[in-house]
Length: 123
Image 1 (cartoon, rainbow, N blue to C red):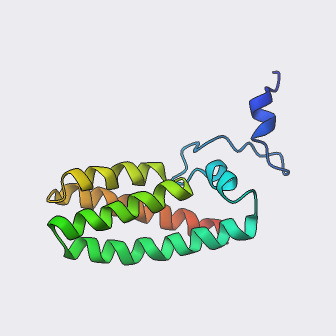
Image 2 (tube, rainbow, N blue to C red):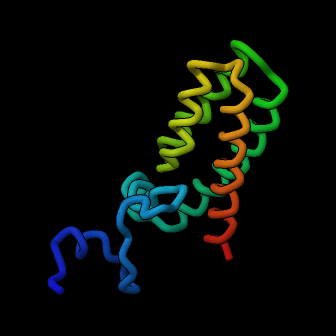
């Protein structure tokens, strides 16, 4: 099987393929582009993002209406910046329907998935 140029471009030094997302809750290829490949910066960004998600989710569950829209917008922007595009999509839906508690529950599930993923990277 021939290796394509895209596969070479997304290979990391250990040889593991780093295709965008690949089922991960955070697109590490996107994050690497955002950080110019600085692994220390990536780690710092992800840890800050993890902390922010916990705080925002606590607040999001306690608010409604305009406050919920503002928090969802904050989460959406941060999620897009780090490459958590699934989370950004759900946050965008909450911006459109802030009264929908089912969307908040979906967002909470995605936040748990992302926080677990980031914790796994730190091991």
